[in-house]
Image (cartoon, rainbow, N blue to C red; front, side, top):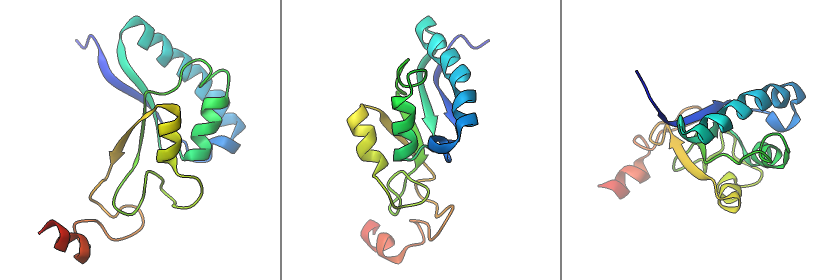
Length: 129
């Protein structure tokens, strides 16, 4: 069996800052993750798809960030998006830096969900050559 997990993340921050029900539901899950980390069952805990505003709301909530900040934020990260699905607004990487939260990127070479992928971009292909 599995004795420990390196990283366990809550997925789906989309609109977290404004969604009271999502925040309520996240509190019980986050308490469990924090407890697993304290017990050594999980090495690191994180969140995924949180923009800067959602991450700040998480950090400022006494029952979420007040209990423990995420170790990691896993977000879409590529040559065109600096960690946010929908560019605009505050830079999520800057907020992660301020909060001392590591960033893990996913789909770093694909164009998903809105645009050309890095491997298909002629300029990036030229740089890589």
